[in-house]
Structure formats: structure tokens, C-alpha cells
Length: 140
Image 1 (tube, rainbow, N blue to C red):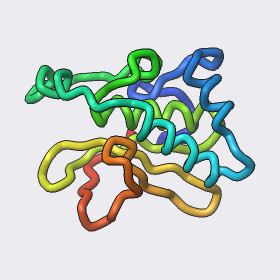
Image 2 (image 1 turned 45 degrees about the vertical axis):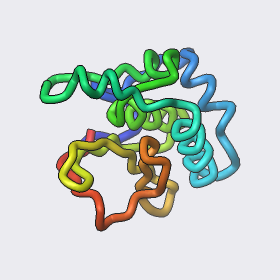
Image 3 (image 1 turned 180 degrees about the vertical axis):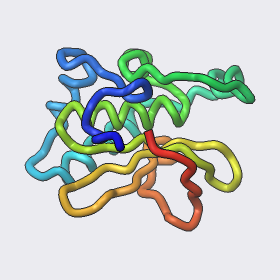
Image 4 (image 1 turned 30 degrees about the vertical axis):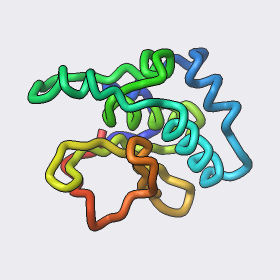
């Protein structure tokens, strides 16, 4: 079982990279406050890339690059969730990149551990996740 703290194929970052430096600026006193700040940052500062979504539609094997997403300020749900996970993990906060469906459509979101419980949030839709709408397939 992954630790959800380390870089991985789908959630990578450079310890001295720009996204890790930005994450440090967003860090607050508690894990929950930090999760909230990183979530707000990713959900409000990064645009959804509809063109990229159309290009990747029906394909397999796409691997997000959080550093590139940070630089471009746009991406698909997989990119935004990967970016948020990378930022949280770079701060030592366990975070899962979750892939599944919402209303039957493929989607990715984040589950982050605040020290007490796992908080599910969706930086693409800009909301804390309602359990009834999402179907989880796997965690990365």
C-alpha cells in the first residue's frame, strides 16, 4: 500500500520546484487549514483545459505532470488533482489522487488526511465532494 506521502508516477514534484515553494507559502497552522488553502489555490487559480480534454478523450496512458500544470496554470481534472496531491505531499500531508466517475463520466479528485480523517475534495469542480455523486475506481 502506498504511503500517499511520496512522489509517484502520477503525483511527482521537485522538492525545490516552484509548486513545492508555492505549497510552503500556503501552509497554515493545522493540516486541515493547509488542505483548505491548497484546495482553494488549485480550484481558483487553474483553468480547465477543454481542448486538452478533447484531445485525450478516449485515450489511455496519460500521465499528468504537476510541475507543467503549475507552470501553464491549466489542465484537465487529472492534472488539477495531481497538482493538489503533489503540493500536499510536498508538505508532508498524506494525499490520494482518486480516479473514478461522476454521473458516469471519468473524473479525478483528491482525498487528503488532516490527521483525523480523510477529506475528499474536487479542485476541478471547486467543491468538497458529495459522496453520493462520485464512484471511486482506484487511488494513486
